[in-house]
Length: 602
Ligand SMILES: *[C@@H]1O[C@H](CO)[C@@H](O)[C@H](O)[C@H]1NC(C)=O
Ligand SMILES: *[C@@H]1O[C@H](CO)[C@@H](O)[C@H](O)[C@H]1NC(C)=O
Ligand SMILES: *[C@@H]1O[C@H](CO)[C@@H](O)[C@H](O)[C@H]1NC(C)=O
Ligand SMILES: *[C@@H]1O[C@H](CO)[C@@H](O)[C@H](O)[C@H]1NC(C)=O
Ligand SMILES: *[C@@H]1O[C@H](CO)[C@@H](O)[C@H](O)[C@H]1NC(C)=O
Image (tube, rainbow, N blue to C red; front, side):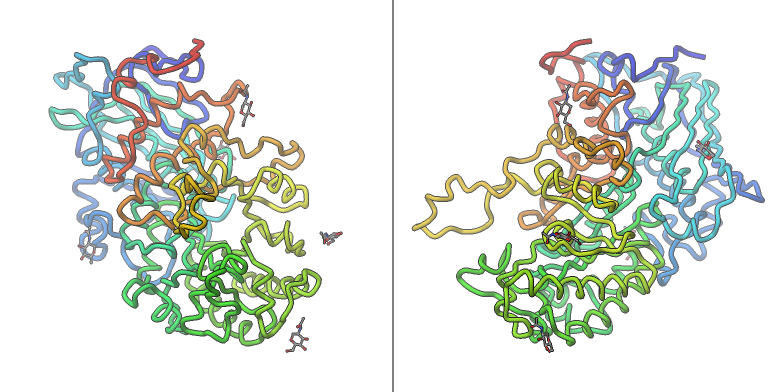
């Protein structure tokens, strides 16, 4: 056995290149022996009844060539008409990705070594020939098919011996996938060809701190091709996130095909071709599920719905009031679903029946929105004609009950934004998860009322902040708004994001109700051109807080000095995967250990 170094005690990463795994595992010990990995490495796994021998180069090609094109098509997942995914498929996909990541999407780590560094010599090297995957208990069909909240045990043990035997043990297929993900992060590309790890032997036990670790992507303010969404899902999964929240409709556009209401997207999308078809939507959900990521779809309502007006004007009140739209909505165009209309009820019944039946093979949640509802809009609602809280509140309660009853009837658990509970004081079912965004106090109030909550304080975890205003100001008022900062400026750099502890300020008796959180990519000023760099690597900082917790083993705030070289390495891995993630430091800082710091105390 080589020298075993406990990373959590020694800041060894600072001295000799990062032995970087992101997010940082629960426990991680490694040595300093070099092992190469054979390109025809075989994957063996014990399933409940059989021992399969799977060789990526040969067996898989034979096994998948006929019916499953996706195996060799880069980035393509088969379209299997809404059947969900099985544990076997999750493992197959993880094996394929592992091979591809190590041999095709890796990088030469010169940035993490001093000038003059030499790569390990491959002459006479020991090779890893086999990887053993052990599913430790029988996986029930329904567990594998859906990534149920909190029900999937994502923990894994990874062991790599000095003579090249790699073993990953887990209690679920998703756990195997998480372990393989970590395994890929041990390897670097060699300029002479092939890949190696300098860290053998390795022993890791790992499990997430929070059960809901998500990225929210707004695909309504701007249009994003399916490939962009899939790339975000891949990067989120590579950071061990397990939820992808698709904010799929909003006031500005309705890009989601609903076959029973075809005009919705045909008229409500920015263009009739900028629409996620039923097949697109299925493909996105499947692409997430096969990586152990649950796609959570949000139809935000009753506010944020003006795009419905293009097909069903009779359902929307206060549509596009100008010039003072801001009396009626948070953003133009103003407009809200009418609050006392049986036509709205019928519309929602049709919409949710259609949509949720296509969601339920992949997901256990449905997000019914509920943020930023503007009461003034209901003064212009011919079914209500009032902005009084006492008039509106019971109608809102009815609206939510109707929606949530339907969501439950179709087998899913509702999620809402915090305003429904805290501003409208609605009675929500005990099952409802409340997503917080406005403050830590709000998060504390949600859990104090006994609801499960998702953290995501906008002052920390909103990725859109600091770009400046997207509104144009008339010259007569422009000076009042100078220098045109946006509502959540400044830009939230990764250190700020990383400093956020979702449990700070939550009494310990309520902490179990904070089930996780999300990073949010609102897209007013983000489109396919700048998407990657707006999200990555900053969302990775959220991913580590949610997987590993905001405090280290000694209960201290996590150190930027420890995290920074690891995050830089994750950034290089994302770039190698084809994600345009920004750098966070100069190579000089990474090459020279602790030079780029202030206040370092070894
Ligand atoms: C994905 O599949 C489609 C249709 O089968 C094909 O046209 C496309 O080239 C594939 N994409 C990649 C990246 O392999
Ligand atoms: C698997 O489940 C067992 C029993 O609940 C638990 O002790 C173990 O930590 C879990 N994870 C792994 C990787 O073994
Ligand atoms: C809601 O609509 C019903 C029937 O259309 C009407 O009788 C009732 O007064 C309305 N409620 C409010 C608060 O306007
Ligand atoms: C909210 O509702 C609770 C009971 O459901 C009530 O006690 C409380 O006074 C209400 N608060 C407001 C602001 O209406
Ligand atoms: C740790 O981080 C929290 C924010 O989560 C901050 O309030 C606190 O001051 C930090 N503690 C120390 C010792 O720096």
